Image (cartoon, rainbow, N blue to C red; front, side, top):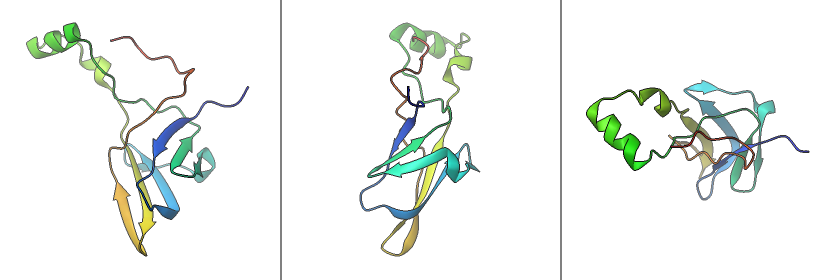
Length: 103
């Protein structure tokens, strides 16, 4: 069985060198690879969770669902037209086998 990967889409035209940051910390290039328009990361990344209607109501009332909102922020540095660009707060697509808390 292959190692689970979390996928992050790259912007159109993104070129190497690609650098990935999780919560503003650069991660080691041995932990990720670039496959076409995708960065495939082999370390757990917590994507933003979609909250159910009931949880949104509780959150609006200030009732303790804040712990459920912990998510990692992924930023990617890449080259485009010879200039360094940054893509911030990128979408994280978890592997199909990653368990997600129900919300």
